[in-house]
Length: 75
Image (cartoon, rainbow, N blue to C red; front, side, top):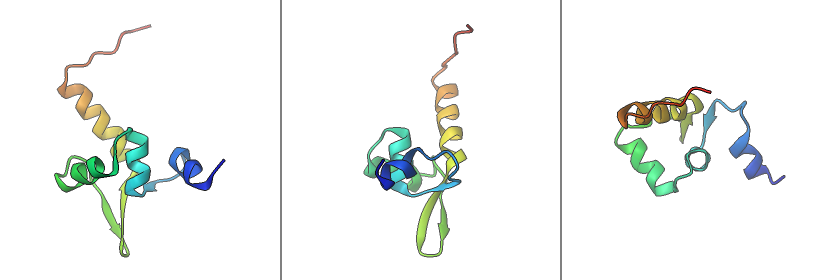
């Protein structure tokens, strides 16, 4: 498996590049930068790099589901 793809799906990563975060959400790089710029998805600087905490993506999706009124169907 290519290293870039492995990093995109590696559940052990706690901080993702913007590109990895975009891949996990299924959005483009530009959209991911927009979500970061507006504060919808938090990011942190590590040295000269910008990283997105992996749990921030889960929180973002959970928030969006609540805002849209999504209710999961019980099995």
